[in-house]
Length: 209
Image (cartoon, rainbow, N blue to C red):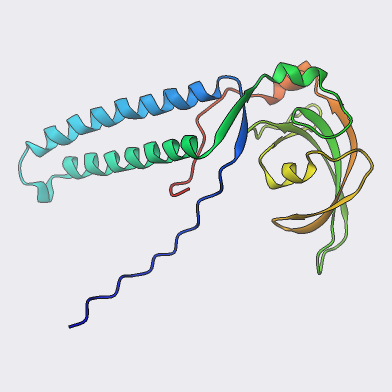
């Protein structure tokens, strides 16, 4: 009798390691989150042991709930551990962004960008945006100036970093090919930083990354 065939489960390949720029203190946030998960797991194990002592496990909903919660915490701890071990982190101080040179796009610059889609069927319309090229995970928008945070590790930021003003560049973005033109580069102001940079939080990592 032939052995049963194993089911092929499709999984996305893990992303390649990156050098990730983060604000000063981000690694402490990661460490604190991991320690908090360890404490939470220990409490759940106590709940599981207590529920186990209460009788028939087939109808013991407290035991099943604690078991499922422990698995969820374990997955999150594994995701955080892989995220930390897979990548290289460099902490930067946003105060240095106030005086950065402005010859070409760098981390910490405020830039105005024109984007024109050029793929098949593209409308060839031009759109302009204002971004602060920011560290990992920043997503805020300044309601006063309309500046959006653009994380340095996003595909658009990767295409923009190193570009000079007024020199169009054709790039391949996830949505298709486009021509990017940097219209202006300047240093960020302290008021803009105060409005754009929020309290650091642990990363939201999709399970299986």
